[in-house]
Image 1 (cartoon, rainbow, N blue to C red):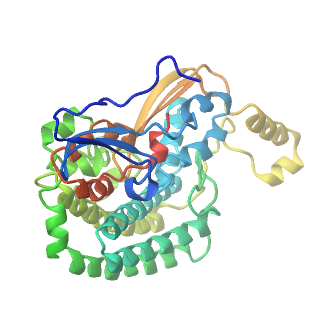
Image 2: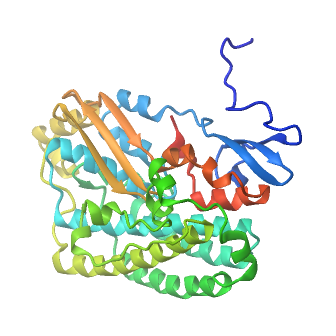
Amino acid sequence: MKLANPIRPAFTTTSRDDTTIVNIGPSHPATHGTIQIVAELDGERVLRADIHCGYLHRGFEKECEAHTWHNLIPYVDRLNYCSALINNFAYCDAVETLMGVQITPRAKYLRTLLAEYSRVADHLTCVAAALMELGAMTAFLYLVMLRDYIYEHLADLTGARLTYSYGRIGGLARDLPDGWLKRLEEILGEYDEFVGRVHGLVDRNRIFIDRMRDVAVLSTADAVNWGYTGPILRSTGVPRDLRKDTPYLAYPELDFEVPTGIKGDNYDRYYVRMREMDESVHMIRQLVDLLHEKGGGPINVDDRRCVLPAKPLVYGEIESLINHFKLVMEGPQVPAGDVYVAHEGANGELGFYLVSDGSGTPYKVHCRAPSFVHMGGAHRLLEGYQLADIVPTFGSINMIGGECDR
């Protein structure tokens, strides 16, 4: 069956007689997701590139309109699945803002700690994949080993390895298990050792520098015009970070720096992520101290509008049973209105725009996902460089396919 208006790439003919149009992807290992790149090549040089990221058709935003506010938490896990806890907390924060709910001090410190822990895991994944694609297998194994320690540690807390569903409107699913903070300190010690080894292996490595420095250069003006945020924007020299500029959770109480680059090239994007991991580890250690000093008490607010009653109460009194039933079957009744709340995700500004009509299900959910925005200007990083630069450049962008879901 022939479509009336078939979808076509931005260009189908060459701009010169001596160039070639090639199709690259969708190939997940090379492009970090189901991405198609239509490129016009002059020999080995990319003249033009048209990037298609619309291959993941889960319909996340529309699907949200058919489920309760609580039931959406596992869905947001699957946006950036390398740092799913940040998605959890940003979404829950948006719903709590609509409801006028203030989370407890313990929930605030735990959310901040786990967000930074997730940022480290996300950056480890990004840098490890990029190094592997350049042939640096030893550095790759060091970083992935650290990432797996973090994944196993988070699984002890949440019960899941990747898509945690740990956030709750009004708090968190459960408190820390015994010995969790002790294991955290052990992993941070491993981090210091193995990331130091990676710095020694690649920072001044001639092959790494030749492949990364002055490749895929992005100017500050282009980064701002295309809506880039996060490490990519900061690699151009702009210290824009929502944790500093519009502080939320426990970030106003923390001492940390915002690393920036100089040229906005692949090397700067590597450097910024490596430095951000150091800052996240520094923040995690501060948050452990804050948990001991000020983080006592419950992890959930005492608000029957959104928090499930304790199981013994559900089993023992009719009011709690009815409350539990209505929250599960109808969902929290979120007051009518709209709100936009943004957190600093691992890849940039992660924002949720929610519209409520006062019922237990959203009227509208929109996610301002950094990877989707970054794909709009990714061609600027590929054009003018070699065909062989496409894969490491895509690695430095760290596109996560789940965020491109539309």
